[in-house]
Image 1: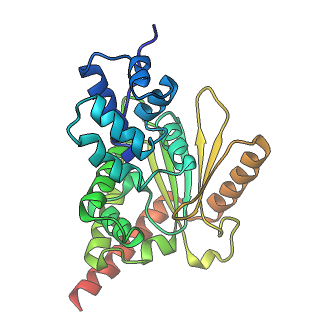
Image 2: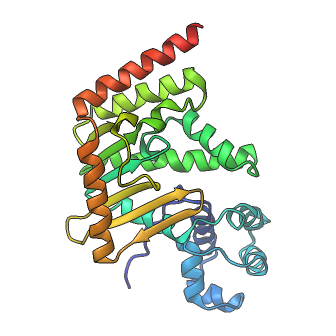
Length: 280
C-alpha cells in the first residue's frame, strides 16, 4: 500500500481542515473507506477532503464531526474553510510552486508573496478581504509566511522577480511599513537564488500591463504559467502554445527592466524617499 500523501495544513484553510480530519480519522482507527461508509459518502471524497482539494458540504462536515467525536472542532473549521475556498488555479499554483526549479515573475501591484513581511501581507489582506475577522486574517498571513520555506530548502528554486514601479511606490502600511518591506526585500535579494529587477514608469507601455504573471519551470516537466488579474481573477495556463506566448511576454518585460544592480540602487533611493516622508 502506498504511503499517504504528505499534508501541508499551512497552504490553505481547506488544507487545515483536511489535516485535522485525517488526524481524527487515524485516532479513531478508521480507513478512508470505513469512514466513508459511516457518513455515508464515497471514500474518494474523504481523500479529497483530507488533501484540502475539496471542502465537504455542511451536512457532511457535521456528520464527520459526529462520527469522529470531534466535539465541534470540524464544525468550527468548516465555517472558515467553506467561506474562503481557494480558487482552483491558486490551489494548483501553490502545489506547482513547491516543486518548481525556477520562478520568473512580473508583479504589477505588490511585492511577491514569498518576499513579504508579515505587516505588509496583513495590510494587503485586511484591505482586500474586509469581510474577514482579525483571526481569519492572521490565519491567511501565517499561510503566506509558510510559503517562504521553499526559499531556504536544500535545493531552493531560482526566484527572479520583476517589480513594476507601482509596486514600490504605493506605501502599503504607510512610509514606515513600506520602508521596512523594501529593506526586507533587499535582504532576501542577497541570497544566491533570488534576483530582483525594477520596471520604471519611464519604460512606458509594456506587454504585461494587464496583470501579474509567473512562469514556473521544472527539472523534469514543461513550463507552466500562472496569471493574476486581481482578487479571484487567476488562471493556470498549461497549453504549450499559450505558455510560450506568456513566456515571451515575460521576456519582453525582463528586457525593459533595470538590471539587478541598478534595481538594487533604485530601491535604496525609494527607501530614502520614505525616510524623508517619515521626517515631515
